[in-house]
Length: 219
Image 1 (cartoon, helix red, strand yellow):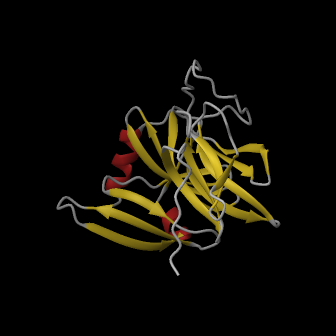
Image 2 (image 1 turned 60 degrees about the vertical axis):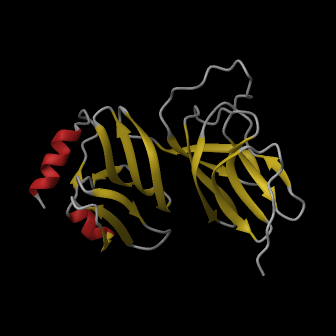
């Protein structure tokens, strides 16, 4: 049976969402001009705001850790600060990092992954705690990389469009777009990805051109 519902009339934007169960979902949206997180109950068409601040929240991913629902998301907030939204608020300009929130205790918000120096995170796929595929953006362009605890591996390739995986699955799906605008999918193990990657020295400046040149020499 297909069930249809309408969001409340005061919700005028939805940016991303994840399903909790048949009756509940979490979405990133807006009812006041600012991006916030909401839990929405389909049967009652009611919602609870998890955040009500001036920061962005995007790229939602839900996980269960030790029986506790955790929501992972990108945000440009400062650690666990949740500043009340005001119409005269100055919009934050900080880089986006990965945060996680205890869904049952939304004041418990923690930063779990920072972007590379001089960049901001555009998207991510969480595999397990402290293991991520990420796409960062900085002044010279974008970079795909793999983060394994405190080690980072550059996966950039001039034709690479996206890398994806799933929690606790040791495989990665890479999507390439060639010069004829045709898409190619490649499935590889994490070890294969790391073997062909360049480990980043985070003590040195991030140089996209050097990274891409090294990657193209290997192709």
